[in-house]
Length: 240
Image (cartoon, rainbow, N blue to C red; front, top):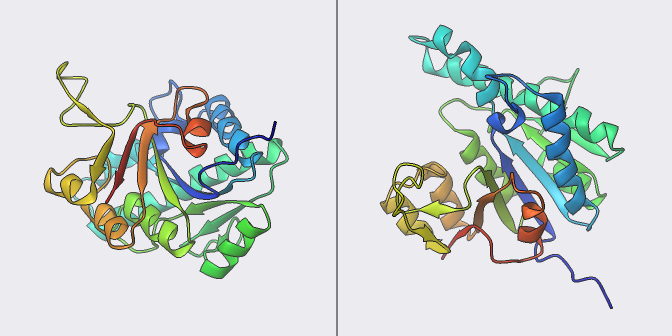
């Protein structure tokens, strides 16, 4: 019997920087990073083309106090550099698994990363190389969510998979409110109208305007990423 084909052949996986921390208060936990890379490796083996955008909160939270009162653009550039640190940590984890991987940065850092060039990123994925996209859009005042939406559209991805610690989008915080209701599907306009904080409004609007579905799911339950890629009903899909 033939193995079912994945629903998504090319995805952008959005990870938070905090997902690399493990039990630490900040920074990168190598064991946790290897475990997350192993989950991603499982879908890579299915032939899925993968781009990853990782945030920088685990690094930047350690310097947030120092950034108070700082110029916003300067603080944003610091955050972009934090994402580059995380991208290098993920690169190292994939390297240990013998996965062909490239780090591409929107900020010029030739000693450690390739410059982000759209056609080159597409070519890497066509050649079955996993790409990790660092430094957001390369401009301040844009979040890594907005950067993820932009890159997903540019690279022709079929969906953004937003990795979280909860199993989808709720009408209110499920931790604080036991009666919170989970959505299986929600429209872009409703997500924007209700100001749902899973992604920022700029990211939602860009995905809406380019018909890019977003799947919000619990990444930290083993096997969930593969289930989403295979098309199982899991988490919350944001779409039309």
